[in-house]
Image (cartoon, rainbow, N blue to C red; front, side, top):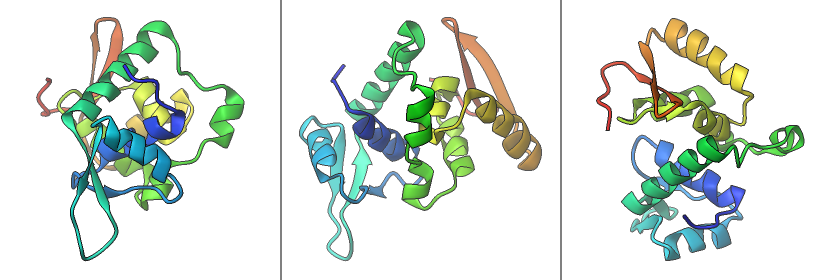
Length: 163
């Protein structure tokens, strides 16, 4: 597992959450994006008509999965309350709402664990669980299933195959 900064980890999570498999890198983060590209975690999608578009590679998805496992198993990577208040919102940076981001994470075949959802949104764990129950399950009528795998609770939208 690579030593990534919080910014690089957020960029990877944002790339993974994009439904169209391509996103514009965040402004002012060229150095962070460049490192992710050099390590093969992000790839540039050629597009002469507009801004550079990026997509996550299979190696990038593996890195995210490894980080999620490390966070859950070792308890590392959990931000302090001050870091949570200072954290920028990946959902705001991409122009998409955080609920859409959570839904896209839940639609992945492997689903998402609570820590992944907390990191992606910048919300407290109780807020993520409230969004799962309220805005997504009740508000949108999406069936959410919860399973414990290897001691970690994973949420996903029912009907999505597990990896």
